[in-house]
Length: 266
Image (cartoon, rainbow, N blue to C red; front, top):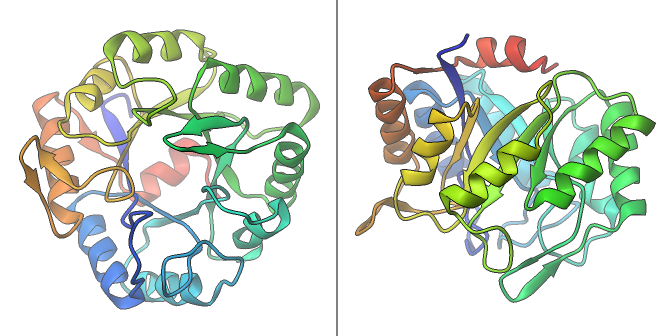
């Protein structure tokens, strides 16, 4: 699996105000056929607001599952006024296999993304209790340090998977220097991948792949840009370009089964 990488598609932008389960599902199914092994979804209502109500989320997942075995990852995060208990709602849905885990607060543009330590510990405990696989989103070095402290207190399944998130205003910039600093702080017995918010090109993704990233997140949640001037209407072209990039680097996308086995999901 040295030359294999998991592509994760995050198909819904935070600014979307019409959540159509059938449209999202068809986009995700097409992305899975093109090479995506995981889909990252937030629990949203029909108008796009984050909610603990699982109705729209479940409808979307059921439609995806009818035609694809893509790994279902649910977010436990996002900027909202939800309680941590409400944010953990998708952990109790049996079709959710993996979930994002946020372990510290950070500035995201004009907002503060709040993850106080007691809430982080609640989320960790519930994730482990429900036997979901966490993907730890780290926006700066302190978040990486926090998960290593939590590792002393909780029995995480190995290997721990980090997603290095770069590019949000107010947090680590999407530069080679920031990427290298983040990579150097990640323990050698763990795995990591890349998420580039507000991306307009694939330079940082290519750099991360060259330095050993085992996951790439792509999709409208982070950016609609295919290149510096072209925005796309579905997530499929973004996945297809990621697959071409992997091929150019003598790498290939993992299948969902390969990703489940490699990351010990499920």
